[in-house]
Length: 434
Ligand code: CMC
Image (cartoon, rainbow, N blue to C red):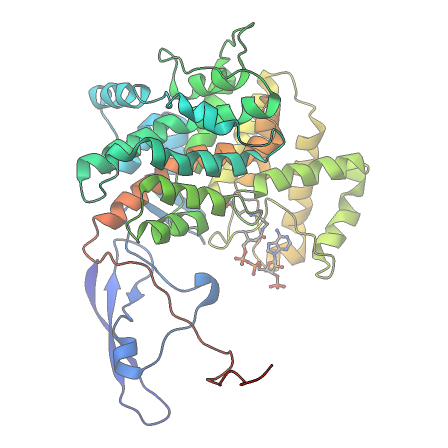
């Protein structure tokens, strides 16, 4: 970051001394006011619940312009990456800062492929979970347990260890997600096959059985790979901030990623893809397109507690570029699989059409987000609703680990420790008698 010529002067109405605060500029996007000396100079904290106006870090990984609806990974527009590259290219880009050439990609692919297996005892560890456990509960446990199985690469001060952990977690996530799925079905685990692509291998681990192999359909593989690319990183969202905060204490990278998975699970975040599909299914069961009007009235009624899931975003106040790409993929996949008349897709399109014309959504700048169409694509390729957020976690793992690594090498790195505005009881004594 660069010190700007601008300065902010904070003057206090009680006659206290004014404080001058430096301003920093990034390469693009809003400047930031450096408030690190504010408490020392005024005895006051800033108050920003939900971090509406707080930059918690500097970062060179992902940039979002929410008003324009623009998303860049390391400067490259998401549209170009989704159309021209695969997920492993994007993983390399997020981790290293630049796209790989052909040789670098081959090397990176071989490195990731070499780490796809998990310790055999992980399968025994999984037996402790109930079969009907939510896959995100199982995944949080499995990833946390990696710290116990792979503690030989967790010296966070060592760059080589950090890279080994990053490769391990990216390589093992598909295996762990597929394990959680197979366990929920009571089917035997399918081991990874290294001659397949990252995404093809995941599909096979999900859908093959010992009695019948799974032949990877190219359209399905490409669609899922695009889902992975679109979810790979999204700057300082709730789960990424969780990974950073958790990792800032110096904990194991796998423990920090497990914390991110736990955060992602919530319906306001990654859990929205599952909630969006459930919403569409319920609406379809109640009468489909004909009931859209009544449903929208419910969504707009603040007392109903109903939200249009897959709509709205803290940062995007324009169409989420990922949603546009996802809608395109949705059409391609449904057509390739002969599901052009999918009623849920029609219903989603109708909900979007009505919402984009409705004052409630227009005034609040609420547009479809990435989760609005991703569930329909996943359902079409055979992924059950309960696995949607686990797929999101698989894809976001690279973003989390790249951000964790960036934090640890940042010269301004400190343990995260927010302050508060205390509104509880003042000091008082415990009564001598009950
Ligand atoms: N349906 C109906 N009203 C909404 C919605 C929605 N989906 N989203 C926001 N609003 C209204 C909200 O009621 C509020 O209205 P008012 O100003 O009258 O009180 C206004 O829009 C601003 O909403 P907010 O909740 O203050 O905004 P936020 O930035 O705190 O929340 C959000 C962002 C994504 C949590 C929210 O839009 C939401 O709950 N969306 C549905 C869940 C969802 O799709 N989440 C996925 C986000 S994208 C993927 C990811 O990051 O994981």
